[in-house]
Image 1 (cartoon, rainbow, N blue to C red):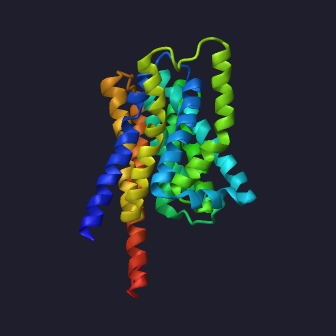
Image 2: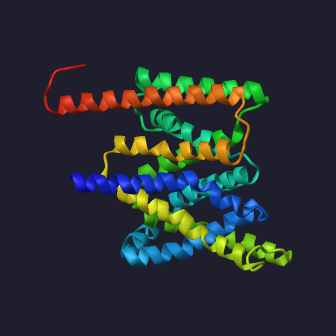
Image 3: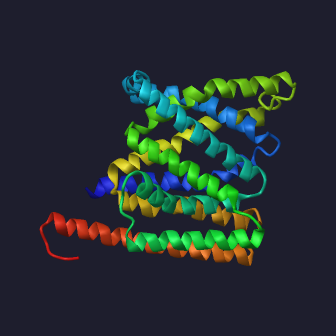
Length: 302
């Protein structure tokens, strides 16, 4: 329905736009160590997650996930992956590597293609193989220029890629799964906060502004996830894929126009290769969708 599509598009813009502008939030906490920021993000995600689960009446889904040992073990692994992803992201923002995070999330859809082929038996096809090859070329070009792999970008892309792969296999509701993940990792986060407290240098309580910003780590984590879930419920997957590029594009603009990070020739070549790969990937996805539609209608065609 047109109204549902419009609502889905608004939710998608809100989710991916929010994710793309998230560096602004972390730039407001320059004096808080990334590990301490991560610990607060986990703890406050549990607090606000419990509130959101209550408001959406999803406790049955949470209990169901906690009631299966195999599911809990899988969510413990995804909790480790997503917390690692968050820590690398926060570290990159704190160390003026915003452009590296943008590159990581541009690469991520292509990493998903590679993981789908390796672990789910999906066929890559010539178009997607070309897209992955272009992405690899761009990454290699940057590696040669800087004298090493862009580890921040690759770590973000692959940690989130494996996270998405496992979550896809579990098939759990997004909010319930994230609540359980943060709940499982929360004891470690509390230990980290306890350690900073014992050192006499906790950020929380140092001043009202910093304390409020750390509390907001919960909504900053959960709200775009809820918006994404609403968008995914209303829009086709291919449409979601288009909106996905809004996030890293906004982050890229922040890096170059707001935070004055250098956009060197090496970066230009890398991004040109990645953007070309994404164009090839998108066109191939559209052709695949049209072919499947024709086959479903019994129409001839390649």
